[in-house]
Length: 196
Image (spheres, helix red, strand yellow):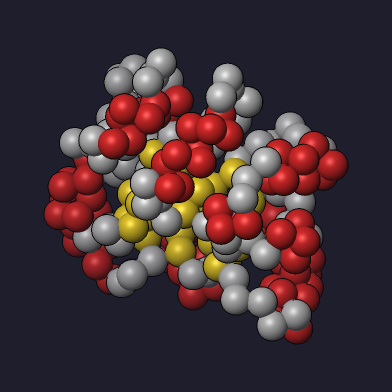
């Protein structure tokens, strides 16, 4: 099962050290989601990672930084998906530079999943699980068990993900699982990561 960690939106103390340790422990994909960072600040943030770690990073903004750092790829928001021409140019530019890259997106509905499935390497579907604050999933697990396998190898579970969610995600047919709040709402994110 593919494992993804999404950074906290706002920087936390020792963040790069913690993320570096996760990457050293085998984390295959790190999503850097820092919506308020300018391009220059995101560049500075990415410079804090080693080159081997940068190859595992997918960014959510300032896509042209993928060329500067040789990152793993980009994650396209719903807003950016609507800008079809700009997205087409970004994809074409990546291909022209012959970069091996991953391009993904997020969906919050099954209809959106169906509409975007063919255009991306992966799709993060959320919310799938009940989170510790009681926010309920948007989908019935029986429906997901029936529908997710019809999109083989592409759909990642997110939203309320905990270590206990991994088996449930596999059972429903997800190819991977993404963690965010479970790790970053804890004072010991590295300890939680070790148990995943």
